[in-house]
Image (cartoon, rainbow, N blue to C red; front, side, top):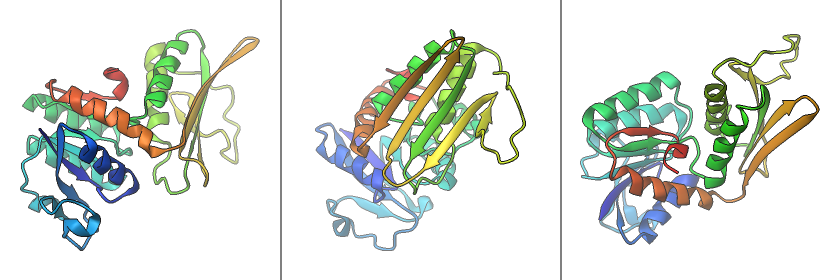
Length: 257
């Protein structure tokens, strides 16, 4: 049985993760963590009475195999450091960490021989979109990314958009050359090695992204749409089973599918 702690257990994504764990025949929820909760009675959250609820990371003493994190960008780095330090395999779906922070966490996990994953997106359609974009990048020198999320998403650009840009840049091996810097109203979006990223935050969206490649006389658009957060749990479950048999930290679900 795989024992699981869910960080951000009562948030919108955390609740989906708890449901996935509870419905799995080979997983067991042993604890939930959220620093903002006051009530530590699991039954008041609809959880089994044997599940422990924590609001201070320093007090977590429950033995677990996996730490699922759907918390907030400002907390995820410290949460993941704690999990790795305790020998708990991290499955991180919270975006907002810098490349330096990700590199530090990978170094820590790899030194301990601890399997884990940090993924900008656990949706299979989004991950496949990134892989397809990486292939297309070898044939198109120019591209832009448009990501659309619900109005409550804290960070921008999304981790998915940033990782897509990173994969495109790696596939090309060089920066994209900008055409103009004349943009007094900053309408050209963010910039990752010349690749422009545009972030929308509007009600009605869950998580959508499109990558538009432009060439002489043609364009290619690769897009995906998420209409229900439930879809992310397929990737989370796949990742949990994968990291139980590896001994390093993987960056991106695309590395294991």
